[in-house]
Length: 217
Image (tube, rainbow, N blue to C red):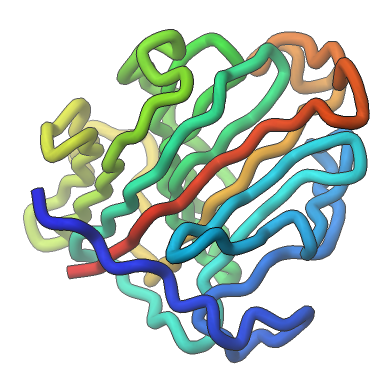
C-alpha cells in the first residue's frame, strides 16, 4: 500500500480552532487525567500522543480540515502496548455538532472494537481483533462510509473486518464528521468495558500512540 501523507501540524497552537489539526487541552469525564496540549508532539513527520502521570493526549481535526459524511478515511498508526483500563481510540470520526461517531477503539486489553454512535444512542461494540495482536504493532486503519448504499466498512491494512449496514444497525451516522485520535486511562466507572486501571509505575512510565500518516479520499 502507498505511504499516507504526514499530518499538517502547522497552526497547532493552543486554542487555534482554524488549524488543520489541534491538540486538546481539557478533561474528559471518562478519564482519570486530562488531555494536555503539550502531550502531542512531532518527531520528524510523525505525530506522537503521549500519556503519563501528568496527562493524556487527544488530536482532533479542526477548521482547515473539511468534514465529510462519506468517503474513505485512512490512518497509519503505531499502537502502544495495551493495558487494562486504558481507552486507546486509535482512529475515529466525530461530529461536534450532532455527536455522530464511528470508532476504532481498543478497550483496555479486551480487544479492538468498532462502534457507531448517533442521536444519543450506540450500536453494539463489535470486536474485530484481539488486543495481543496489536501490542506495539503498526497498522493502517480505514473507515469507509457509503451513504448511498447504506454501509460503513471498518478496515485493517486494506482488509474489511466488519461492515455495518443501515438496514440492520440500530444507529447509522449520517452527519459530516472529522477524524480524531486519543488515549486516556478510564475512571473506575469505566471498569466494566475497559478493565481496571492500575496507575503508572513511575514518573517515567508512559504510553504512546504514534500517527505516521493520514488521508481522506
